[in-house]
Length: 195
View 1 (cartoon, rainbow, N blue to C red):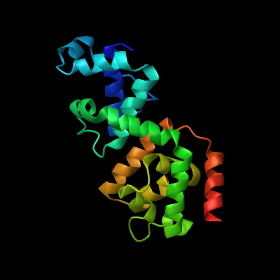
View 2 (spheres, rainbow, N blue to C red):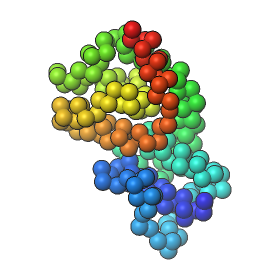
View 3 (cartoon, one colour):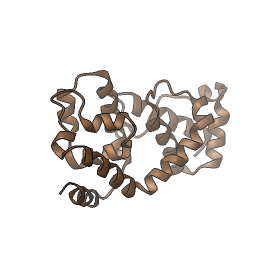
View 4 (cartoon, helix red, strand yellow):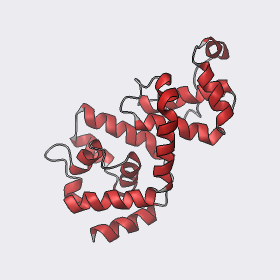
């Protein structure tokens, strides 16, 4: 990937994670950014460095990891990614390499605190699942897997009308296409924990 292509990838992924309307996959990573505007940027060194350091897939993973780890995608400045992006990326890779183990541990903790129906019950406000996520006890990857198994987002979207849930919901929806897992394996893990 050329430095300009890395820049376009950055813009496309930032739009994907911050905008309800833009979809990275639907629009095939297309963004409006000219090469001349790229060469006027003072931070283009980061994109040049990244294009030399990472292959195409690694660049996407590097950017996705940084956008998923932040609570405010629009406020994530490229300088922050330059300063702490490598650490975030390494932590993200470690999580994804041991995702089965992490999911099992987090699910065991979650379902030892609450029954399955209680964990997803939002009749009294934020459900236990969401509270655990906000406390950092459940990873975004595990939330995506719970969504793939239980399809809880639509229900939560109807019942929880607040900015905290809206941010979490958007993050889960936007992150879901990037998590490719064998759901039957995770269903089996959940059956063993819950039953």
